[in-house]
View 1: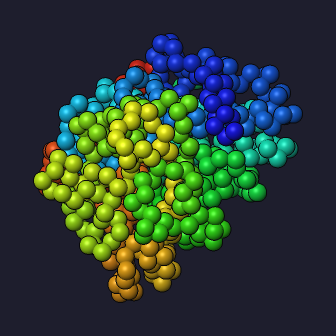
View 2 (view 1 turned 120 degrees about the horizontal axis):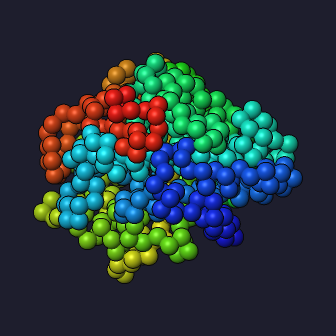
Length: 499
């Protein structure tokens, strides 16, 4: 039933967000008049006040866009929703190596050509996708009474909470991709809080972060008591972890970041994967550690163009046929021999598949050969993230004892002896948490976020195809995307000089 609901929601959005040439040629968020007009009609607003299934359906449609091919406004085989940009960020971080390149996808990412040239399509795809989610969220919020409203119907409160959380989530990724590091007074992005048609100038980082914090505070309150019908929906736990990511990127209020993640841990709704489960494929949304993800079925129509198609060596696509994404060798070498996660990666050095995640990510039909149809699920967030963020926040708040507790809770499910953690404090403890974050969440789109939070410098290992051994700091211009050309052409407030 949950998949039927999602299909219906996506079908509704197919009417509203039809990808005809006129729409795809419009820039950013302000030019898409057909989409906005359809979604903010008076009829829709009236229906929302009496039937909470209407906004709930459109919120599910937002989640549908997260896996939609072409949602970044292109026909590129890199364009398949949020998980596509997880790959961008993992490659930019250096923790994911492109060890064999046959077909050329992502070549402009790994060579840093796209992030340094605003005319390249990668910049446009990231921009369009996340602003499309922003626009969808703004329309839901408008139909529910606006930014300051608290809906009367309980179902509408939950819809409002999810829409605000998704707006914050999208702005968070926009800030990460389009600002080198948090600088409160730097104008970085247009901030849209209404489904308007006018272009806007760039808001400062502090203005955008303040709005994310407000949205997430509202979302956490509105989602109190929400029992979701499927894991693709944002609940209170997910909203709190998103908030923790925002605070971590901002570099302020680490005690609150620790409190938010501790709330999630204490809620007990998810459990850390055991040692024996870390090689079970990461392909099932029913996994007890998954806080947020989506159940992929044949009706979603995913295959060659998908996250699994790019990463999985057993899907009939690029990860199988010759575009191999592997763990950075220098990072692999830092995994202790008794760590259960060492087995996630193919360790035969003489093979072209060396360090591919053959036992971390593989589709459910791994045994028996190759399949072109993708039915393995997408993971967006795991409980392990809450533990690692909690450890990081406590360490940065000088609460080393609490940080060690959270880190040991994770590592006791990965290695036989965690006593070494008792001897860590200060920067050494922070560095260990950062290392374990990179190892634990490899390939899940979190390494780039951690690189920026930790203000780290990455050095590509020997299995990369370029820039091997070159130190690249977190705030290097090559790691941040450019505001795309068509936004500059269509938004008079943004020029090539002030982009």
